[in-house]
Length: 356
Image (cartoon, rainbow, N blue to C red; front, side, top):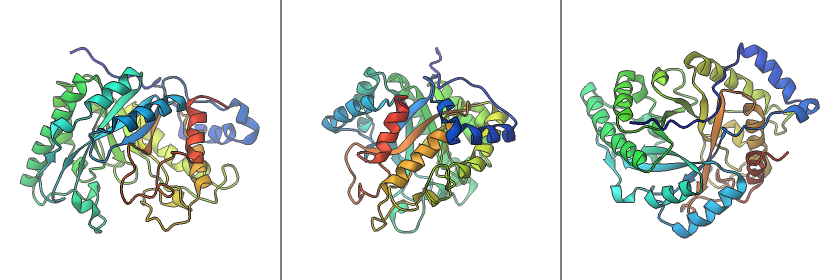
């Protein structure tokens, strides 16, 4: 099988961390701003494009959005498909019907030259029952149950990989935020080997930046290190005087260490901030809708991430969470993560189109 591994960008690595940290602080000072690097042509200028059931069936909406993404300079879209796990401690996994797979949307996006990161999800209704459970809560009661969970998960991911191959998808995430499952690396190495037999694109895994980066050991079997980057940042909310840039330093040091150890580029498979006051302190916390709206704070958080990380040669893309095909029920656009129609959208357009 001819390889179709997507080129994200140059694979260069810096060190030691202290040197570039100090250089970073200078590069982002107001005096040095005219010299600051902008993303090169290989940088994945991404968005997470969300369809509530993974089918992307509202063609009128997504055709309009594809026009908008082109004007913004978006070069990659993250597409999500789903399987349902009824119980977080039970091994049963039920993939969505294959007829829901987003064939027409992926064809249309790729005809426009947009590259696709396919990120299949396992979700559960128990994530939404008020118990604060999430994908990191998936944990089996016995080793036999873990073996069955991986067996069913493998069937789901191999189906997704075969479909991704047949539609020319450039990158596939083999999983995301399965904090307990990734403590069993042998299962993942076997799975990756099987995926390679049916899929020729780039492979990544979308690790929870706060809970998984310290224990995943199978990055050497993948092409790209993926991070769902909901890192806590400090305030107050100004770029140079308030700590947003400085609070990235410890996270950058950790990620450069990881990139250097495995000699792999890093992409943010998710990054984002609600448009609410103090969102950078707990960017993983979904807004309830009663918070104070703070559109400029969201825009500054976008600016800080792009300013700080796009000069790092190991950082090769970001997918912003998220842009809706159709607004989901119970989600207030004024509070949610979406940059659509907000100052954060203007920040993205400026950076993605390389306009100073």
